[in-house]
Length: 423
Image (cartoon, rainbow, N blue to C red; front, side, top):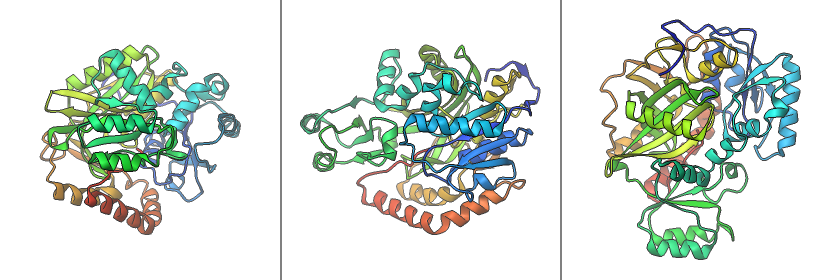
């Protein structure tokens, strides 16, 4: 991990607040709670956009104020920009923007000049975050820069899907081509594994004249490992903080949100990620999902989130720096302390890891790089110094959450499609 000062604990600028920016209805988001706690524990005043006054984020003791603003993520950009500017005026001083979804990250990038007065954020090519968040855009960038990714097709009609099905090796994976369709009318719900030609053609009949999907080769979990890279880069695309880890379990199984993961040193993967970021000229926080394909020995880039990932608190260095702290320190002119990552540290998302554990035991899947014993554990929801978000999560999760988990479990048992939940 790169930085500027070795072994010195991070000293944040307490005069510059942070604002969690989220668009859409997903109140049980542990990443936002983690960011509020991370900077709040350093004395940074924290603000957040929330769906209502009773979300876990709104209940954190480290939150100065919640701005209740229900959105879908599909509003006109001008409306969202004006809403952010209105919040900025209410905060009354420049604040660091911390987006938790692609809609927010892309909006900030594409309206940098409008937001630059009341807010601080990494400056980036305005078109780049949208391209990275797009499955097609990311695939094209990987091809352009020689980064491995699954073989993919982008059909423009049902006839092209039929032609693909005649030649494809099944199972295949279908994903929405663009980042924002999940809040509108998605062709598929997240990542969908399709077992047969007939299954693909049946699903495709509901995708309309312009399918809006990417069809990808399936990387069999028996021959693959799921890896994570979280990092923060400066204006020159040099790493301020860079971490690698392995995903042990996700929910839904094998294709969804991280439920259990470990910090694992992987210099090869860190170098691959740093070189790719330098080539494309990105600055700010990234969250990458890669799958190591044992059949050809390549790390294949599956997803590029141009923002903080929900599980970012897995990663922290010996000086107490995570990617959110690194960004705040850098944007406020503070040094970013160096330090080794906490190898062997574990991250657990309490409300989804138990069902994930049961599903993985049934499948027999194991992660060879996960350590036999954790050097420490970070819980996504519970914290002794901030217990209310955990209790609020339980109150909101128990009935609808249990029903949702049951539905996903039935889907995975049928063996038809595996649905990814947004990170």
